[in-house]
Image 1: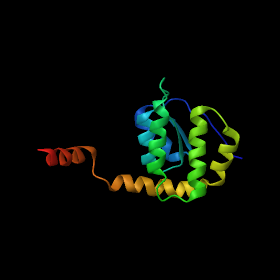
Image 2: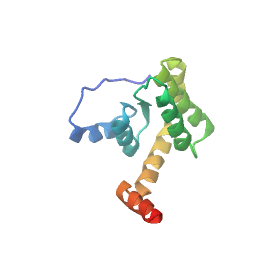
Image 3: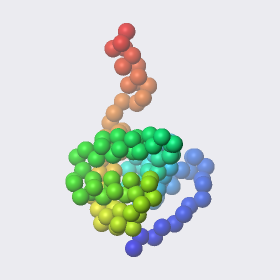
Length: 134
């Protein structure tokens, strides 16, 4: 059984260190989402809900890209957990599946963080993109 501990808000300078210390991070919003990916630890993202359901499209787009190269059972467990957390249904079975695949998910998150770190920074990417348009 996992030990779940709520943590109070911390200053932004301490947030990354907190993410690095946790075994699984439950995060919300875009900035925390990016930081959780960089941390290389398993995480579960709650997308800010939008009235038209656009947030679920964002979630699906991320899961499709993020799941590339991940073994099927772990990919399914991640998808089920993220969707359950965002729609508030089937949490118990989704959580169990996530925990059962935690080692594979942890390996994938470390590789995902390395993949992100190997990409050009946003400024360089934007400059290179704009250079092709002029």
